[in-house]
Image (cartoon, rainbow, N blue to C red):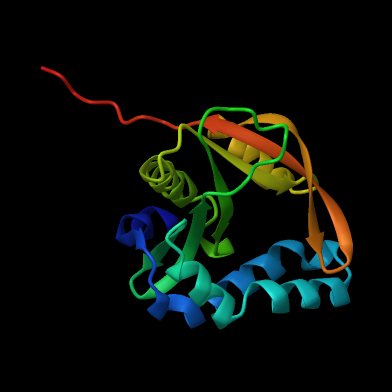
Length: 186
């Protein structure tokens, strides 16, 4: 994919229940691509089955406390994120925290700047949910993602745990203040 010429063709917008099957397949594929090499295959299969089926995605897409954002290149899904109201871990003591629950891109669009564009949309969605801060958990071994989030001004505030099948994994918890748009005043 020619990143410079294709990036401008990406549309970012809200998902709907009609997107459930496509999103489930994309979410499972991108999670597996990101983490299969470092996880037990049985644990990974169990996690994918419990987390990314069309029924689960339809429920999330219908939930008013979850905002699902899709990034499409033409008709092809190339990224998504989910922002939601949830109870944060104790290390998140910031005002009005909203969770960045999921944030994945197709590996073919890594390095194109799409992740930063999608993150701006995430901030807007969190603000619409009345947030002042955004928090996330990221696997401590996912160094690429941690570097990206730090570039996006997230700060490490502690740890939490995430289950992949029967495997309890340590996540770093990162928090950022919501970025307010800069207004041009003349």
